[in-house]
Image (tube, rainbow, N blue to C red; front, side, top):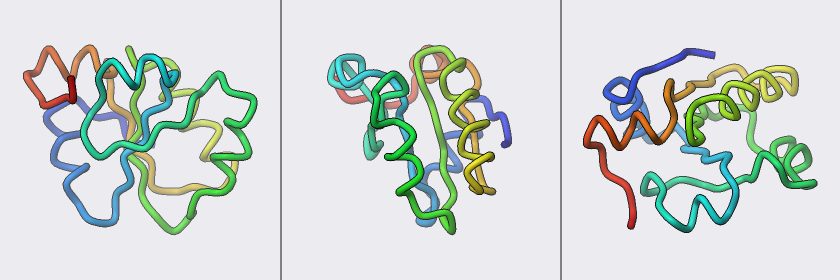
Length: 104
């Protein structure tokens, strides 16, 4: 896992082989999220099966509200055999504070 600030994260997520993954709850996701992100709720009973179903040959850029759930998700994904993982340090809070785009 590579820990990135909002500026570096923004550069990673525009690459075509990177999948943007939001691990917040669906309620949080519906309020606002980074455009183009896929939502898999960290607290859902389907979290592990949903992660396990993802393509391990892809790269994943992962974020949550403040960075805790995304770090934990990266650890779980690493244990599941995912290799290219990027974490948004500070989560969507830092993203917004850095004046990056979110849906409203």
